[in-house]
Image 1: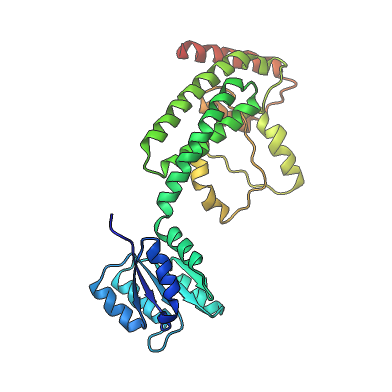
Image 2 (image 1 turned 180 degrees about the vertical axis):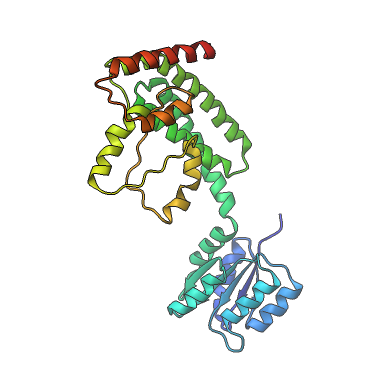
Length: 304
């Protein structure tokens, strides 16, 4: 395997001998330059994996050198090193898409950590994600055999979705296939749980919040407190929401997250209508129960 090649640019590079020896002992190949111009000439003839660039140098400054480096190779990671903590320098460097920003004095371990973050990040994340899921696999399997309430099923579902999104980002397809088989088993067990408890939810038993009780129990109290904008996205799975939650979070702050159950399994058209129906479940409870039981029997006949 070829060594990772580092270009270290600093007008006081002779004073950095301990850093260079440290990195060489870690199996890195280090090239040194004492000016920005020298670094640009080196990059024209040598391919390197990362540049550690001093900001304050005679001649071409670090920021000017950074701009020229991006012209040569826009994808080359550059770590800016500076004595100055002036905000405009940080903003200029970050705006130029640097890989990291270090303030002197810098010790060898900081350099090593920056290397790991910039070059080994994806590999480290993959290894950690795989290892963590392997540890969680047994816990999830054990929890699945003991889940006996709708709250526990909601939490288990969120956990499976979390690992699905994590494993999608790495190349280990074997782990993803194991998760998929675990999801199939969870679906089977959840189907049995629904089959056992569903009718009781409409006949006085302990029931979760369902589509037709969602507005009355959770939305109406919020409307009474303050003006409320209600956005309902039909057929949006939790994993889909999870994947773009960060984007929404740039504009809105999430204060609570709650899970509810569809009024009828696999029938989102009924669930969507039920949210806005605002049916008085006290006066029409028996009528609702008969309607739900009828639709439930049809669903069971199709699924068997």
